[in-house]
Amino acid sequence: MSYHLEGRLLEVCNCKVLCPCWIGEDPDNGTCDTIIAWRIDKGAVDGVDVSGNTIAAVAHVPGNILQGNWTAAIYVDDQASKAQEEALLKVYTGQAGGPVAELAKLIGQVVSVERAPIRFTVVGGKGELEIGKNYYAELEPYLGPSGGPTTLADTVFSTVPGAPVFVGKAPTYRSRNAALGIDLDIKNHNALQSTFAFDA
Image (cartoon, rainbow, N blue to C red; front, side, top):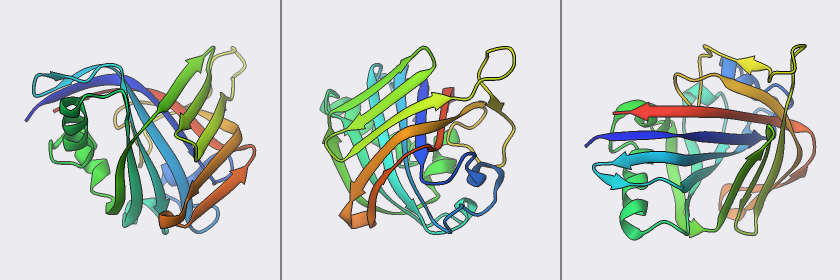
């Protein structure tokens, strides 16, 4: 099995800015409730074109992120065809190997896999993520003295292995999933944006 995926990441969690998980420290609250969404702008999995789709994980991390044992709900863009959905799930459940498999192995239990409308937009450095009716976040990057985004690179943990991330905050972050024990409506917590290119 082989794949090539290029796209953008939006990630938000209930840690303060900046999330300590990325440097291998324990989350601010002892546990972490996060949404991670990968927008595939261009890509294929074993010849199946998956361009234009988004896949997201809503996850509860019970402690240090490197210890794994996450519980997660997986959401696939409801615009995806059945073949595209199956291809994306093979990659993001680790079956296809490569850099995404290293991330997938941190998930100990998947409580659900669902299709949902996913809105993923990035305009002028500001992002917006909405999954169905229960998940919504706005994301804004921090800017450096030159006006460019503040960047975090070469970290011990990453949801986009091999790529730097742009540090930001979420003016709004709402997430509700009873199976994961998540019920959040918070402001100005951690957010990250990035681009990625995955090959296997």
